[in-house]
Length: 497
Image (cartoon, rainbow, N blue to C red; front, side, top):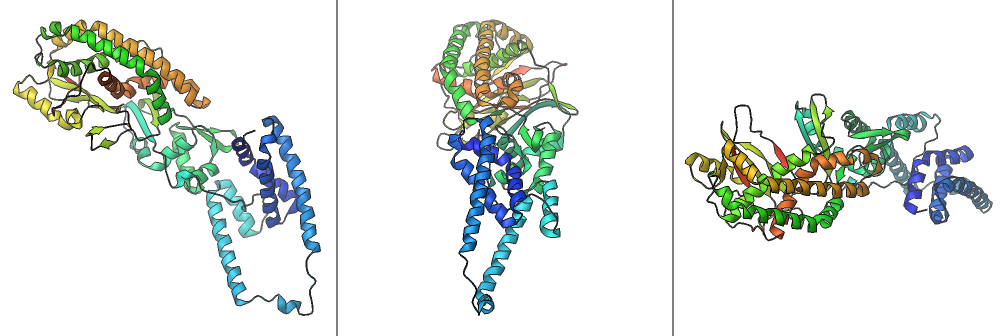
């Protein structure tokens, strides 16, 4: 058996081991010493344990043998104690230095006691207070050496993402403005943990941890399990998963995007004849806008083919989905002047923005593009162009948009097919990376977030295919402006991918 698994089993049953020692020795210091020796002996010999079924018999056999050795060693120490002489009473009077040392020792023990009490659950705190402060009996000891986990000083880079519609809930939306809730979910993702274990891992008193857990339970982001343990009820897109997804799909994505753009180039003369404003843009600028339109419409076709797109309730008055990431998805590279995800340039910010009561803009701020080419930074340029009558962007009436979509129907279908291929790979890969506890929701979450999480990736693949180039001017690139009808509203919402 691996030492890590043996450590986990011991941690889960530490109370039982302590109870075994307490039932035989009673004296607190002896109980603490024996407990530590049992744990040491089990871990030292963990590689000899065949499997978990054999673990329990091995544990209690080691406990019994360790207890016998402990008693023999204790008796042996007693037999070597020096006999007191006539001045024994004087010899045992403590010196001032010894009194100071004793006081410091007691203060240190009190400090350790308070620290340990802060890590206990409410029930165990009350039991220990009764035992250590009110001279009542209990089996829980505090002599074990404890070390705070890494997250106590180096929190995980956890980001909570919610895609929802409906009533706004301030408590829910502000929940992850703090580091603690996200790090609780990150810590209990792969391995169920008790409040006490989470307290140690995060370096936060159980007194405060209990309220945080209750809040996460309220919104069904964490689930209570037997034995006082909790496990995250959320799919987390880890950095390792994301990089492996890019690696496994790169050749496929570049190849298919290359074909989609090449086919779009072939119909550019037909598209320009439609006569929309901006039809005279140079090929590269026009293709960036058309690629985003194809992605947007291709995703609609893809989503229509998904089996389960019914939104779920995430709290009363709102439906949607949640997921997490465990890496810093955005970062600004001042040298390249680009938003990046590490070395991959796959970050993106996309969405819709109303311009006036007649027009709205759909845009994608691809991470592969310079900051100056992002709508979020230069959206006013699009509005100014629309108002002035200039043809600097692709601006479509409802009729023109319908004609463009019809001319690009093959490319839109090919994009939907690419999304289907990416989803199949992403689901299989996530089932290898995610814990079995979230296996039932992996396909749904991956399917519903695929578009959002691959916007920037597809933009990078377009450049890697050499079918598109990064413009050197300073204006939004991947944007198209469209006419909205009386029964249509331009939604002002963000999509982070």
